[in-house]
Length: 395
Image 1 (tube, rainbow, N blue to C red):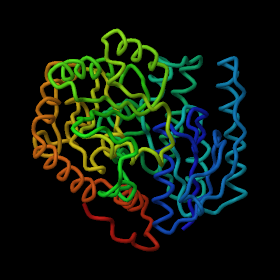
Image 2: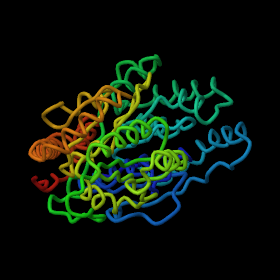
Image 3: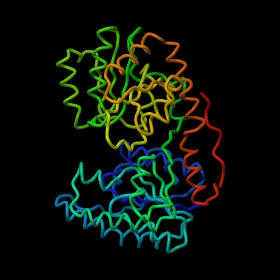
Image 4: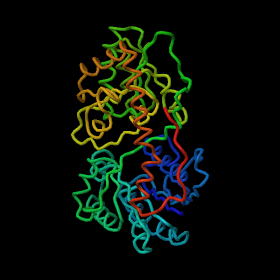
């Protein structure tokens, strides 16, 4: 089984540490476990491939120049000619799989012309996201590309119901959309893994993993932690990740007199995350009340696979993934009092922590592994797996 995997978005460094990078890497690994040989056509691919990518052959697509935004958009559009030529040179393929980006359509049009299944993975309402957060000069052009690539694709894979609803705005997408949430590789999180940052005896560690962006709700987590710490001073907040918001959070921790109890790891390699999760007693996804929550958060799947009790906001896909009181605790988005109460409860009830963590791990191993996700994707493509993946580890 030969697969062409395309990621033409310059903001997705395929061998990096961002959430989108981990997503690409996990999909590639799982496809390899299914017996695939992959040609990876990527724009942002500096650095060495991590372990588990020996089956991937890299085809570099020259990146667009930085600087003038309008020129950058035009160069990204022109890259379609390069991608189409590379696909024709390296093909034929059993499947063409692409992570949707604003200006790329060559992969799906090549697949249609070659009568090959073409699957387009859509992770976000990119046009709206680009216009709001990074700037978009030619919105009409981006919408034309979207209609073009959606029309050419055999199927569109939306990571959440909210992304699927966004896709319904495009006539070319209707009737093609399948909701395929993210997953996790539980073998990365063995049950007996030693903590990388162990706390002193009797310390209760609350943890967070992710980029320190405003939409992750860290200000609510810090306020709740301050309240928990007043009630139980032997608590620690472990924040794994980095980002533009770190300075603000550090300053807030200092102003609250909590610097001694809040530990920032900074950016870490994906291989370090399991040991850091093993250093936590509870993990939090404290999202605020966002009007358009379309995420399928990788962090929550990883928390569950690590056997941690999860406290998360009752929002979007999370409220379907977490069954409150059974595989975690859900709180109202942005409600510091509810978040504090959930954390205090878990601090006082170790048996509850153990029960929730075990149930969460069992559920992701049963229903949410990357191998299960990729198996469904290949079935949607009509592509038989060349071999069945080996039995997954048990909790």
